[in-house]
Image 1 (spheres, rainbow, N blue to C red):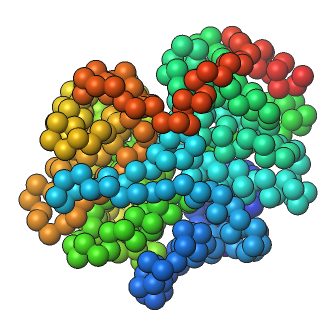
Image 2: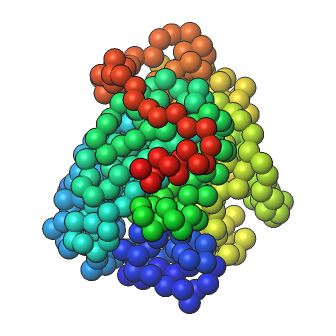
Image 3: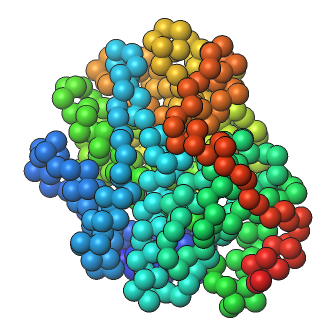
Length: 431
Ligand SMILES: *Cc1c(COP(=O)(O)O)cnc(C)c1O
């Protein structure tokens, strides 16, 4: 399978090069040349296939010859080594819980798959020793650190803003050790991000210590996110209703993978992109003008994105036709007050606890279903409520139970290096 750059279709790369480079040299996002349809028989038999078999059928054409079948299946088995339950919440509404992985967020799936793929390329000597450098405002760092932990030949260096991530998130970054180093930056997330961008462009660093990134523009993080839509379909197909998925969206990688799955034949009728106050896509679908803005801070902070990087891929799937897009995608946006109200009401009515991101997804679904009786709706619960403990506990006026994986890291000792500017980052990387 070849990928082309969305900035220039002539620029092509195979899976391996697309993964190692992340972005094309012309700064375009990679996109698969062909979106193959899966046979009808696959969807008829999907209930009798294992998670690994489902994922293998879905991804094999996007990987091509670059990873042998046996190894790819091993990577998939490890990637999906936890549950993806669809939990009924209200009569026609379910929650697809994506928080049963090691860092309690859906990003575990993409991070693990990317780690498995890069790990294979290093092992085969196809690439040299690599350092994955990421800036995080919360969930990405933990998932990437955990996904790459112990992968031979790959170091992980994570920059996070001091005092600006939650205690649980900080522990997830700073207690792993081995090949993972956490750098605590005296500054905001934007400064972490700027330093990382500068390091990628620094020839001296790139020559002595080649760097790669692990954010959702990388095809190895983006594509595997389609798996859980297939796994959810297995649990929903007997509902006998049209299916709609509502995805709490920030950079639009997650929803774009779902839309790709639909394009491959997965019987999903419609998607809802649920936004917080950062609603560039909601406004675009309303008035046809795409106007990126600076992000504003909300309680669903993993979605505080002013210019979603994967939206160009969504447009590409719909052949850049606005009519096409509107037919298959709706978008609504909700402020923090509405989000808190939803957490409270659903908890009171049903006993189900949503995190702020899932709650935005729930609200979008509710809006879509208002005048549509013939659908079953599923919203994605993208993180465990315990990751946003302060907000959730103050709204539901109850304690959220801490899962065992988190409990065990809370006592571990944090290990970080403090840095304040780019030179300190550079020194650290070149040490
Ligand atoms: C990253 C993240 C999102 C946004 O996902 P995108 O793929 O960037 O749209 C939503 N919820 C949570 C909890 C996240 O960590």
